[in-house]
Amino acid sequence: MFCPFDPNSAQWLDCNNSSISDSQFCLDLPENIFDIQILDDQNALIQQFEGSEQGTTIPNLQPGTYTVDEIKTATNVVVPNQLLVNPESEQECVGTGFTDGGSLFTTNVRYTTICFEYVDEQNNDCSEITLAAGDEKTCMLKIT
Image (tube, rainbow, N blue to C red; front, side, top):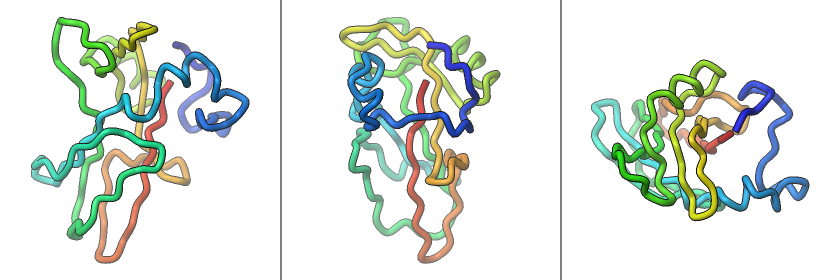
């Protein structure tokens, strides 16, 4: 899918927006199709979880730097509803301003290139987060 504006554009609409919520793109890509992982600054796994509209709270994180990342499967076999590693898609997505990309095959549609990034409420990059004591951060997955 080609999107004519960059990832920081104010033109982005959430799939919960009634003007696009019933589009095939939004229907094919519910939140729970995405698998997310949180890693610490040593790349140790903190938590893995399925995406959800209500979000996931990770309690008791210590001050430090964390990476929020989409889990991608490295395989030559098409696995429905799994984001697959695709170096060409990754390069294309980074070239258009996104932080990452891959291929996704749902039960209905084949997306050979799907671009994504994690952003906070102000649309700032949220793929790496530094937390101080008492900090809270909300990250959302933006896709095209």
